[in-house]
Amino acid sequence: MFRTSVLASRVAAVLLGLAALPAVAGDTGGTCQYKGKEYKFMDGVYFTAPDAFDAAKQERVLAFTTFALDKVAIGRAKDDDKDDAIREQAWEVDGAGRVQLSLNDEDEVSSMQFNSGGTSLSQSGTAIGTLTLTKESADGLSGTFKLEGDDDDLGCDLHFGLAAGEVAAAVAAAPPLPKGKALPAGGGEIGKVYMANFEAMRKGDIDALMATAAADTRKQMEAARKEPDFPAMLEMMKAFAPTKIKITGGQDFGNTAELTLEGSDDDGTKSTGTAQMAKEGGAWKVVNTSMKSGN
Image (tube, rainbow, N blue to C red):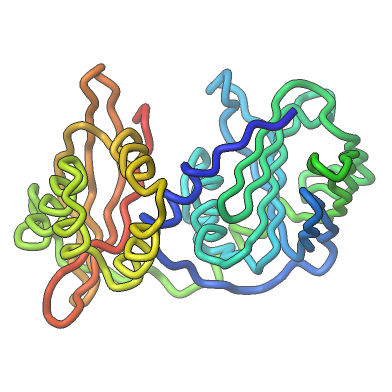
């Protein structure tokens, strides 16, 4: 059976920013059904990433979405961050659906994730559903995936023809990333705004948190604040965030900026990440923060 985590998805959606949407894969699609709702998939991507249980091994990953993916953003992400790049795009599309499959050496689906709005389902093991590969080469994968499900459980019927080099080709064709002015450790004036936002989150000071957040994030938080489970959402937000954070530098692009971060928890867990900042009305605001543990 799948495990559901509604609050985690909703909290993450509040914290994250916007993504661009380029071209659609022509031979990848299908449908999934969950609790009477049908999700039509229109795009997908194939990549390899470190195995969740053995970082020395690479596993094949298939991701399907109900919206057009930004392949450039995925291609520019590190191997172990590509799933985060897809997830962040899904959070920013209303009603979006995302399915991610990890394949083992026996050409079976060993783990599966399904996300849409406030619903997050996952399953791990061996031979999840029925995967049929009609073509596998250095160029990519083609085939089908079927998962039987009743009215209350997840069911999927997907087909795919995904090129291994698609994301790399998208990056090669994209304009180069702009180069900004280097920011010092601490991030200067921009860093002060981010740290005020972080401290407000740790203290549970919603007014101060919203005062330093970008307009889109403020709007989402204002709506979430009216819901009865908002206190639980705030506690989960705090649980996901590091106990302490340090700004190691970044780049200032004029009206936007990116801060590089290092975090730590009381148990010694380390994390790294970035914060996207934007200038609104002449004042710097926090657009989103992305952290990853273990680096």
